[in-house]
Amino acid sequence: MATSTDDSKKRDTNRESRLKEIYDNLHQLDLAAYWATDNDPENHDEDDQVLKARKALPHMWKYSDIEPLLYEAAELITMDDSERRSIVLVNPGLAPVRATVSTLYTAYRLNDPREIMPPHRHSINAVRIGLTGKQNFTGVEGEPITFGPGDVVLTPADAWHNHGNNGDDFAVNVSILDLPLSEVLNAAAFEHDYKEEENGRMISRREQSTRYTDDHSHKTYGFGGLRPRLMRHDRGSGRHSPMYVYRWNHTRDLLQSFRDHDGSPWDSILVEYTDPVTGGTVYPTMTFFGQLMRPGDSTLPQQQNASQIMFPFHGKGYSIVGGQRFDWQPFDAIALPGGEWYQHFNGADGEDASLFVASDEPTLKKLGFYRRKGKTIDGEIINLD
Image 1 (cartoon, rainbow, N blue to C red):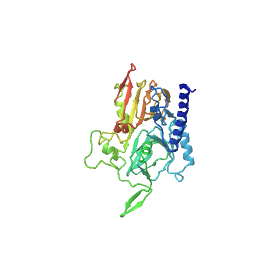
Image 2 (cartoon, one colour):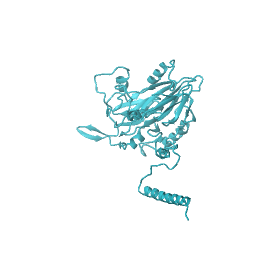
Image 3 (cartoon, rainbow, N blue to C red):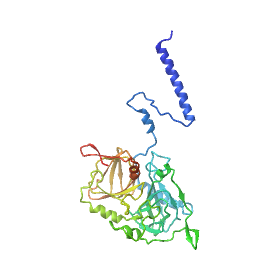
Image 4 (cartoon, helix red, strand yellow):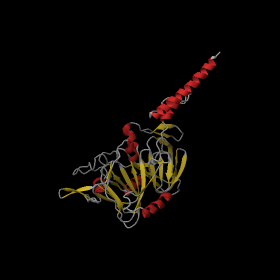
């Protein structure tokens, strides 16, 4: 005679076979189950399943590893082979997707002397920062910009632009783009057939005509608190800063003017690059910061859900990101994925450290997702924003 225990075993056996069948059917129909597979109500296993997507990891790329590869690539890949010759930072947590953090893409490029690529444009916002050489070149919507170390050049979405080197020495720069975000939103597009009007006809050209002086951005927007009323300021799409180049010497001077200030316990001395017309971020999707850490400076731990990429420009130090230590020096790149606790240290006795930081903070703020917390010196967690 069958007992209740035997009936329970039969039901369990039957349940397991039926569950396997439904899982197989769901898989074949490109469907997924959303229910707990762990009976412990404290685990909330069903939530963990949703959050199991691949995520960016804290990671550092050493410029000492990248630089020789840039020179080797320049020998092997000419402009005749490819208009692009960059080395992309791929986060190991996101590979094979070409993304440095979940929303931002970073690439280093070396330009040969007198090398100029044809114009192109894309729906992606980008900045380019000079690392070495004083003759890096970017033409943006007819504004010819020659830039050096630490200078930040905007190439906004849908703005025709081209890159290269106006000098007789090699020049290296690094770019940050919101490409991964654009791809997720199905908004990424490129265009290469540049045309200008000539005698009433649109003619394809390999170079942009110069429509602005090379000091236009500084002459028009480089005097804080003043804005010319003799021109329109909605350059390009009008959804970004009309100031296409931010010179490092101005950023450095502003940072240095605050060196005797206590600074923020979580950021030391931090300034943000802004749109001189609106006062907002230079792009609706990304923002950028210059950061000064004086000798002996250290920041308290903080955590935010914005993803960031940090580039040391001067000095040496180290960062703790997600419990991992990264010792950095000029031109390295460090991924600070959203959600990771991090802090920075300048361990030098007599040398400043200056950093450039790119962040997707504006995107999260516009969507109402942005969160930022910090730890006090006593270890208490508080809201910072």
